[in-house]
Length: 263
Image (cartoon, rainbow, N blue to C red; front, side, top):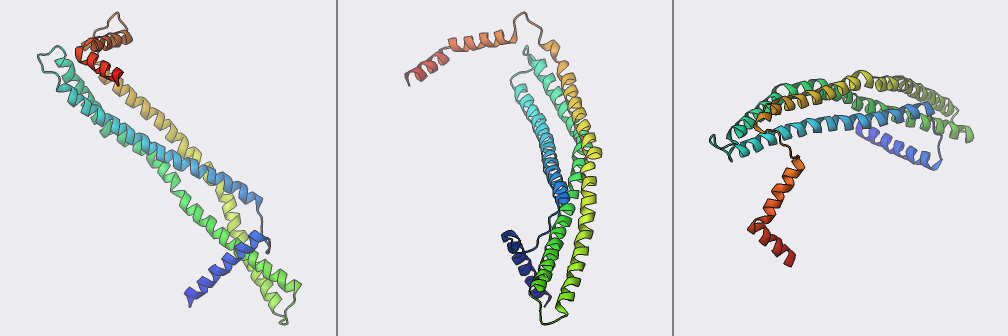
């Protein structure tokens, strides 16, 4: 019996929604709520995007350090200790592995604690708020439906003199329930919006500091390899151009270029 009752109420509510869209029913407009609701939905969208991108940054950083380790391991295979660049390859691998370990042990944990967890906690409020807004919409629909019944009984009086008082009583009760939850939501939405300051501002600061720390750690590890690569009067671009020119002069490259030209 309760299932059928709930089903009928859902059907009536759906019909009420259709009547509201076609102008066949009284509809309550609340510009104050709409303004706060729009601000909330905008904040929700931006906050959830920020939380997603913050996680993506951590995933990308971990992928980058893992890729660096694989490159270092592969590069080490090109040199042995007797080769001129052998010590550089060995030390590069050690530096990259140390950087990867530091990223896993300290930077990763600090980033999760100071950036991802606060953003996650803030975003965790949104489902509950949205559920309350759904309840408000439901009560508003019931209130508008009750008002419509009263209006119809006023326009076309019933033979039962008690129907109008009962309908008015139901409308008043529906109004009180709607106004109660509407007042709570209107008062609380700005508070949720203001909570972005103690959550997002510190997370932004922690994000920048985390990036700075990782960059500094990378610089310090790689700076230790500088002496393996003595400075030259030539610029890096010139050295690259020279190497490319030497490759072009190789027989195999020349033949490949000839084949491409023929095709």
